[in-house]
Image (cartoon, rainbow, N blue to C red; front, side, top):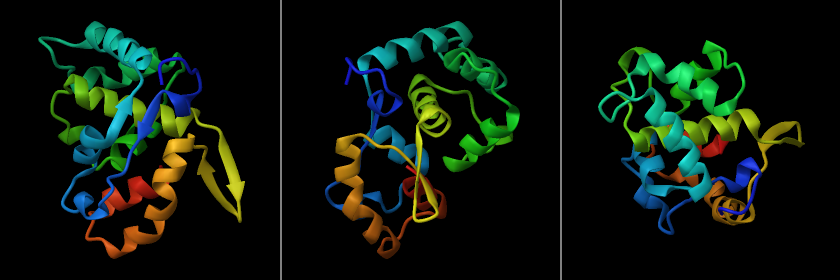
Length: 159
């Protein structure tokens, strides 16, 4: 993963072999277990995290500013709220952000805001890497048969 520059190559959203392993997980549980971040992106995320963190955690009040610095793009508040809602969080309820949660938020932010969008059958999708395409191709058809939280189901469908 480390040698590629495209957004889809900085992160890999995996899926377990046994999809039932997803049952009972929150979005953040899923991201902690199945998100892989390329080493180069980890370094970048860690540098920004350290700049805005206090005693090893980032106060939620610094999240918007940190994401803006990471992406080098001004980020409106509404996309931040959308990103948080996709992973089952609300800004007002956010605890201080640890490094692992920060990487998950960064991955969702980059994936949704900077992926190339493609249109197919009047639906919009983000492009995926080859591994993600293989992982998710059969999983999509089976997600409805699982007992997933509505937030995790929505996140997996948007990935």
